[in-house]
Length: 565
Image 1 (tube, rainbow, N blue to C red):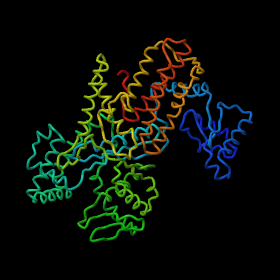
Image 2 (cartoon, one colour):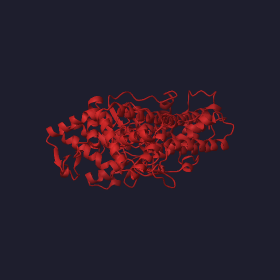
Image 3 (tube, rainbow, N blue to C red):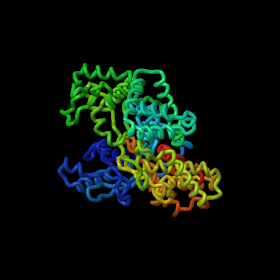
């Protein structure tokens, strides 16, 4: 229920319009102040009155009106606080959640399309822990936008171009074993890549051979392309096992190589627009007027660069999908790169350049530090991180509930969920140091804590299996512990929208923790089963709504919610 709208319509015409009031209304930092508040500081500047006087004036006018109000008001400092009638809140919030059945359906199509470029693994290189944040953030945003009714195009912009493929071919032809590659997949390819660099230090001519083989790929040589495609298929076979564990699917695997035949068009466009300049033999777009270094389009030898391919990709995506948003979930080190690309698109006259957004994130490492250099072979595979987390979860479950059925299945959900939640529980721009112990704690702000709370709600429902949720007396839920849960439940849809608008799944993560903590405080102080029928019904309805929101919210974070733990 839109409680903010109820408040804003009551305010409408008193100092500000209803819409202006709606934009200002927020939630107090301290719950004892009220459920919602209208800060009057901005209004004070416009009206040249003290904010407290404005808050008191609005309160007085509303109280003099005779229309029904389901809330009380109080003035504190420069805030006008609102507290809703508890029975009114519960009777308007809970039925809406209960009526939706077991799951939350995606919103109706809004006719808008979001292109979401994320994960973007490299062919013949490991899917390592450094890919965790882009994969988790992108995968969660994909589900969040779907939930809000967008048509979403998930794009894995594969790193499948460059001289490293010449190196891979040389290494494979000299030291590779097809049976070993078939058996060990990308692990075998990585070992070959590492060996190439070690051998090239002793024999520099290997680099010349690698460049020659990459030239063959560029020229369409049949054998070079066969090997290139072989490495691609081996890599995708391996990484898709990880994506399957994470519950992620892509709509497009068009990577760098896909845009080879589209680069000339980009260069010609830049020429037509008078943007292409020469600098020391290279082709650039001068961005000095925008306090940026030049955007390199072609090297002096005529080779394309990342910017050339990203320009081609953006144009292709707009022409193919007609996106309303084109998001790139890529590490913050690429901030300048994307500023340059978007500026060049703007200079080309593409009005949709403003719809291209870089969604940056921090770095990730394991506790104790871990190098992610593929050349040296010091990498931490994401698949190994997931498996370690699952095994550790299995041990914890064995200790806590040895009689649990399907322990391995539950451990998979808990372990993988723990890894994902740690990636999605803090602001994406922060660097992440991954800790198994912190991630798998059942007591902290973790996925296992949320999953356990969901299982607790499921257990409550099983104990009250004969109770029908009809004819509910919502006045039972007038105490503050119950009201706290109700008001949090009411915020769920707004939280999803906020997470989408800010490209920040951690907003949802933090909300779910708040909801679980609020519910557990309610659970400890309020018996559900075995009470009078009207009390059990109302409290069970509250518990069921929490279970549904936790399950749905975890799902938007790519995390499964076991019924038993």
